[in-house]
Length: 307
Image 1 (tube, rainbow, N blue to C red):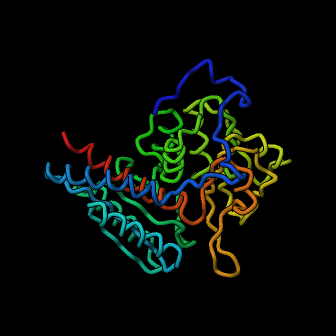
Image 2 (cartoon, rainbow, N blue to C red; image 1 turned 60 degrees about the vertical axis):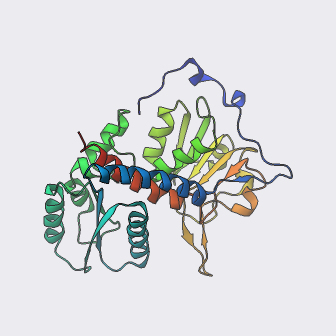
Image 3 (cartoon, helix red, strand yellow; image 1 turned 120 degrees about the vertical axis):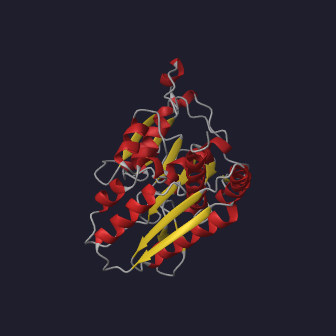
């Protein structure tokens, strides 16, 4: 994905046409489930084409411990593989497993030509060095896009694998024809998994990007300027309607569980939907797209093996 260079990159965000709120002041809902289903149909066709050439795409998933959320994520990823025609391998280890056992298994998977993607579900138990585990995965099979080599390639504008959640967000923006060139994009959150790669991807499309975080002063000042607002900080409903520019595209990456057990995002959906032009729900927004882009990366890895 090469960085675009254009004179329009300096256009004021005020002159960039953004999606407008629907009549009655209610934002259009960007349905991640629907978009994901459409993309997965396409992936199934690609998987079938690979199998016709004698290649069965394969994703290996490693889960350490018994974290309930991680178990759900892994189950959803394995189910996604099965429905798309991708073979899946799942290794589950107890929380007190010796890290060497996991590293040895990663080495085996790296050496297996029938495995095209390797994913270690995070977070890992405290006695693990997570960075060392991620770096042990071959960059050619790092379908999460977390290996330092792949992070560097993304920074240079030539990614091998795009981290799945930011990749999904970009597909959602593309599906809505959201103008990116010259737009003011504000990201709330600076994680290596979402915030930083999200900034790189938006920059590659000539958006003007601001990254906010826990130390940012006057957060609302920044968010109210955003034509595109991405919330990825992990704090329930922290972005309220009065912090959003009318007509803005609001992407809610956060997944938080409330006291009543219900899920919510980082955006207060009820107040935000009356201001935004386009908004993603939680659940049913970015979440399904994250898994879809993991499947996409795995297929792309498999396709590279076909000469």
